[in-house]
Length: 210
Image 1 (cartoon, rainbow, N blue to C red):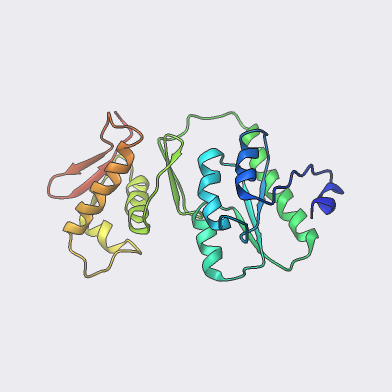
Image 2 (image 1 turned 90 degrees about the vertical axis):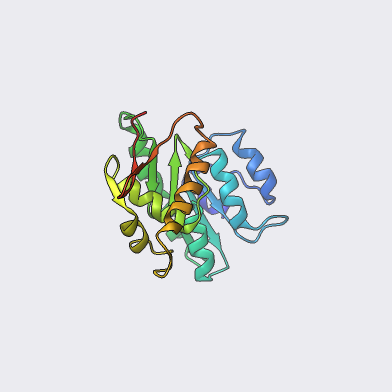
């Protein structure tokens, strides 16, 4: 693969060991990562969050494991694409160029002030002040809804019934428990401000006005 990509003027640095690969990320500026899942010492799916602690550059998973669960988990944890082997290497080149074209065009634009809360529906991830929040599926559902209605109130009932990962038979009080857990995770990054406000008799409001 390295030899093939080199033909397309791509400089490739390979690492067979995931720990070496993570170390390389702190030593070089890369544009993209191609990640296998079957690795020595650490499963590739466990590597993704460790990569995301270091960098937000795109990740393409290239793996002989074609289980849909692996694909879903990989994308949820922050990968940008998933290519099950075998595939034509020309398709890999096309996908690399497509991703780099997209990311480079974003980088070339004047940088606007980033929102405090940034949700990525494709990866089902949320960043707060540039750091990824370690959220459960239900916590992601709740916080993403609050982000969509930022500075506006959302009822507990709406949070309960529009969440994909909360049982319809759950009580309204379960929303309060989930909100409390989200607040604790936000507080690990910014303990000085409260961003989720209770609206008495209604529900909650997410604000970036501190």
